[in-house]
Length: 200
Image (tube, rainbow, N blue to C red; front, side, top):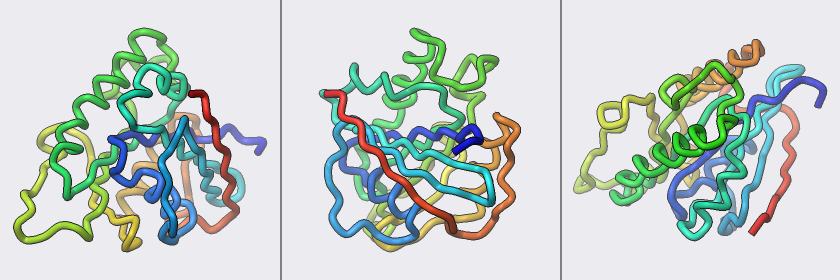
């Protein structure tokens, strides 16, 4: 992996389906047996000949709040995930945004681009996962209005994603290291790797 990878943090409450989403995005299939993430797992998309995108799935349990800050390092973009059938996970997005901003203020190395001073300057995407669980009675959430960030609906279980908008987000993240993505196909087509880190 000679080229500098595009590092994308994936954060959100425990149970919103981050691991299933990352698996779906990298493999193009549903994760048969999801498990709780302890520490973080990283799955890598390979687009084209030399563009690597690391999706860093960070454990979301509240007890790991202090320790998981170690994984917020040199990021080119962040995906915030919530469960569309769980209003609390949506409301908690503001806590995740505050956590990222606090880590950047404390250390100054969360964002790969040293010129960036706030999360608003970093490529971000809010993903409403578990769209397959939405019913006519489910209250619609409005992340673009509430958080002023781009958002998409998705279902890792049903293998559903707004691919054009997802790839546009990756384009913005890759542009930070002058490595624009040129592959606009709906799935990663090259190899996948996975590493697991358990720091607590």
